[in-house]
Image (cartoon, rainbow, N blue to C red):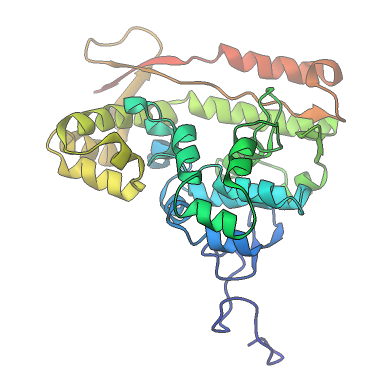
Length: 344
């Protein structure tokens, strides 16, 4: 009950939920970054109760670098942020809202850190989960076709979630701003920033000054990915996951559905990975990373890609509307992507 003796919105028992709840129990969700209040549709509340969505609350968005940075928020927090953005820009597009909730369900434990090991690909895994129990029946019960959602996530046709032309989409927008906030790189109030954004041809568009803020966040994320803080722990995790799959009776498919805690537990239990797993948790400062000469014991590590999504300025590409910002993004291509990593 509230102060007037009226029933609070929330669970069926009349006990209210906090605004940032993630369990699909209340009728509303308020994203704490964007401060967007989302009136949850029944399909969204039901999806939030399924195992593939619940699992994301136990997967670190930053992957292994959650060990060496303060980016410890979950993949589900990012997912709900993307839902908030879609609800802000396209509130009546139910298939797009469902796609926002489901766009990351294929992620491996520790997110991108193990991507590609044993051929595992979170896009392919997500597409299979989308077409399977329990996700597909939930969608179809509410009149949303799983194949329609799959097409939106595949970028056919392009959508604000998955535009593939190098322009800034809502998925990457949330990642850059959320990461910038947790890394102390964001001076702007996200809610005020959002008020200056719009969609133009399914890409994020804004004014020149706000575009500069977004480009700086893209650069901060790229520099994080190429820093010791990311390269050192991720390179070790990729090695450990490979050893685990070679040494334990564990299939790649089973590993892909683990939570972070389950993966760490498996690595700690396996004799082939136990010692280095403990060292990574307790002594990560003893890792060295270089792009130059390294000891013979160093392991090679290569980043899969550096994201350089560009916002539009008043609906026009940066190359013509803000060429200095376009050059700033192009300059990120000079960041190193190949490293050698070793323990001292």
